[in-house]
Length: 126
Image (cartoon, rainbow, N blue to C red; front, side):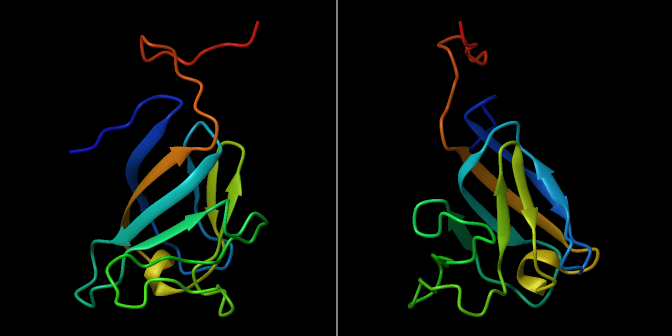
């Protein structure tokens, strides 16, 4: 089981709009990587992971699909692109795998630079 930890991880859902100007998902931190999957289509889509290490510039589209036999793509098709932003991520494709109109997607994101104190409160700069 997973749950969100403020400043460290965010787990939730978003709704697709089938536009290359897709939804913005607020996480409260800059994600190091994002995992997502559509949950509403009878046409089961793959799991997708994008990260800021293998593809450090936006549009980030070098995708991993951990449920496939050939799990890594270089992103040359740009069909799974997102922008990794300082406070979340934005979907940059109309591909049904991550932005079907009205589709519900579950996601899990982990922070690039977690700033959480031991009491689960965001650590503040001095």
